[in-house]
Amino acid sequence: MAGAGGLGFLKLRRDYRLAWTDVPELENQLPGGTGQYYQFQAGKGFYKVFYVEAGSPDKPALVMVHGVGGGASSYEWSDNFAVLADHFHVFAYDVLGFGKSERPDIAYSAQFYEELLTDFLEQVVKKPAHLLAASVSAGQAIQVAYRRPELVKKLVLIQPAGANELTGSAGPNITGRKSYNLLRSTVLGDLLFTLVASRFNIRTFLEGQLFYDKKRISLEMLRQYYTAAHQKGARFAPLAFFSARLNSEIGAAFGKVSQPVLLVWGKQARITPLKEAAKLRAQNPAASLAVLDNARLGCNKEQAGEFNELTRAFLEKDK
Image 1: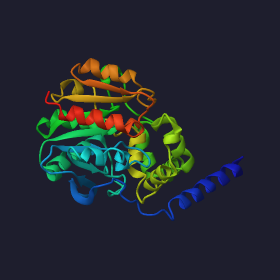
Image 2: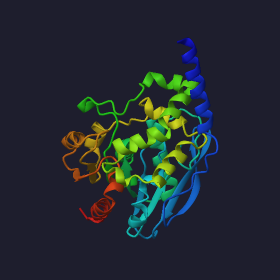
Image 3: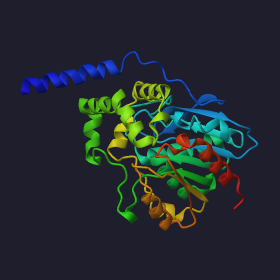
Image 4: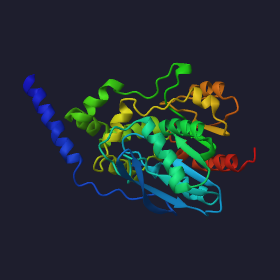
């Protein structure tokens, strides 16, 4: 038994080494925009954040913030970016630790990402902007809108996830908060992420959680997620997500935001089911809710036409 366990461990180590070699550099997949970097200062460190910009500067600003997890990047908006750029001055950045942004081995947290979004609005956008954000990043956007209301005009939030003490939810929590230091500092974290970021598990996530219709999942999409998950340093930020360090408080803050809010939900969502929308609206009755049928967390891609029109109409509405 001990020998079999040792062989299994060695196989995992071998698979880990193979998974992180011969992977091409991640390419920007957002059509019609110009990609560039800006420097985000956090403490004594400076980090490169990749973003894509499109649309007329004379139009209202719209900032898109993708969700987090293995293989996440601004590719999430590939069916929305160019369409919305016809109506808005659009920015989409790769959250630090993901995509083409720098992926340093640092202690990621919800507060860190809230500061990144705030800094991006101040240093890059430089005018009040609409926010479009998904899942855990939507929870962080709620905090920024609440704490810095002068920076945010309206919110479009896809299935916000995070800590909501008013409803007894701790938010996404895969391995537990106490596991973070262990995962970050030992080979255990490397091996865990190698398993999560395998081709099999990426496909399983896309088929079971992101999309309702498996036909929406193309080989190009699978390659994009796999490549993003296997860039150098790509495991550090997801380990913080697995251990619940990225969950912003979305309960009391959501009830106090002054901006108009549109909640968008996939009717067949599993990670954050539709019943969570009712709990959020109970805290902020002024928030609107749009439910897209035959869709899960990736409703902005799976029902892209309807999602784009809903978002445009809501953001252009005067009241």
